[in-house]
Length: 248
Image (cartoon, rainbow, N blue to C red; front, side, top):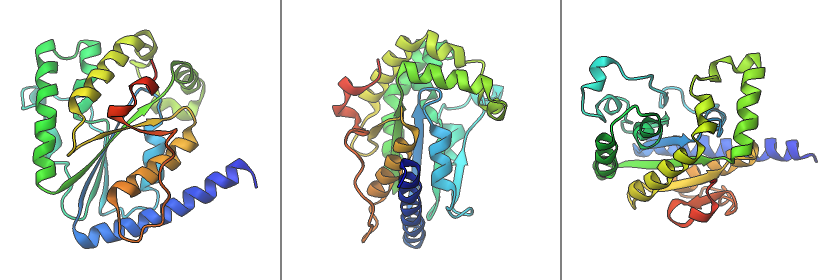
């Protein structure tokens, strides 16, 4: 049995488990919010695809908001995300989120230092309101080494099928690596909480990361009788215990 066969077999098993879990979540009226964050090219799109591949299209939404409009920049920062939050029985996946203000915006100068500081205070409060209203918040930071990121960014440019993955900010990901590391560390420190904890996923091996993301999500939803395995402790880390394992 090849490594590819092992991956496909485990992926199918986990996707079946996820279908059963979503059916249960719909029946129970759960509100599930999955936040995907991480460095450029860390594998967010690929992981999300494996989650949604067989999910209920009516109860599953992926939200990837564009740059805010002029009007939205004058709103309360979290306002444009509120209409996308899950109702009872829904799973909403944010492919990047309000945490743009925890990383990309301060590093690239798209927000002021004061706005960044205010965000770090407000995010845990906002998430507390969601959690108290019955929303299960699963926050994932996908981490990647500098070497692997450079390799993937180069592959994007060369692959015509990855045209829509290429961004004008891709070059900044490597040039500002240290600044992104510092912003990430502070964001994880100040917005990790009991009601909305961060989980870090090591993603240098894409397939292993996808398997473990599915395992972690199933573990967090915690359907009675679920048969999924625990995530690999070498791939999935609690954010408050993994500082020495984060890519620097």
